[in-house]
Image (cartoon, rainbow, N blue to C red):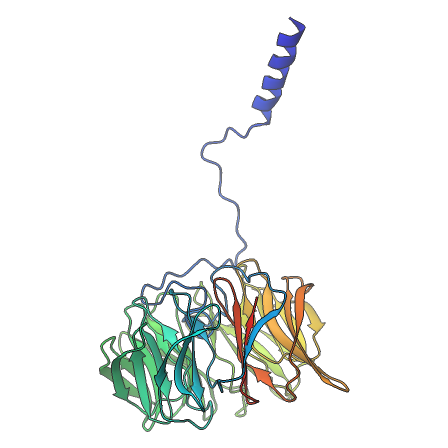
Length: 411
């Protein structure tokens, strides 16, 4: 009898401790929470294009894998583009020396194939590849003034002549968006390689673009005193332009667009020799701006945004800024030497260097609070910079830029 009473008491405690609410209420998400944006034209891989997605959030699909060493150092390729990852788990990037062309490497760093191109003269005018949902690799190459589509087996699908300039983007329907310099225009190219339309405007800065989350607007930096330009993809017309705070705005950070449709751009504060980040609504109205006091005239890398809407940006000083424009923390990492990447757990990955008696390079992973959770030393190539890393399914690829030929495979 005593044993039965004990059993009944235990069952009662289990019953009252259970949450009988059916269905359970969803967890409350912060105001700036970033839902996944389905983009059917893009490969479903961890890093299918430069900046990670057409909104240029710098957010990885998945998590940064655990790494502890340089698995392989390949001193063969002179990389002139950031690398990307296809659904086939291969890395793709452009090399411009010997060999010269689109390089396809496996996750183990073995060359699978190369699509040969004439030897180039540097990264200016070369667009990083992007991988479509059909596995095709699209990129622009300055030496031939062309945009290419190459199949996942390394064969030419099509080539279109265009004096392209830097990075490409892709619409939901597979349309490729590319700047040309002569004439200065945004060009729409079909998935079969035909130029559908072109929009000329002297205020376009032909660097790179971001696309709204619903896919109907392209955002570009501007020139001639213009900071930001919105282009309506339905009417093929300019929606609005925002004047720069100063004519000499910062020119190398791509606009970033969040899930709610807000745009973020870096420019200088009036009367100050320093940079700030400005946020605008999709209608071009200023939401907020924040000055980055310790950045000065240094060139910040592209800002990235984590799952909760926090923005990370900086050079020597790395800043974390919340969705409403408040600086949450700032940390000195000596000098960032490549662009940031953030994963779905708010972990960031980047390289830093410390110029002391030697040039000390380090690959660092930090959490959303700025705490270092992993790091390894990188080879000391004096004066080297790294392209943004591409994170694959099991490894990380980091090509050097503007230094000696080297590509690092990290696991």
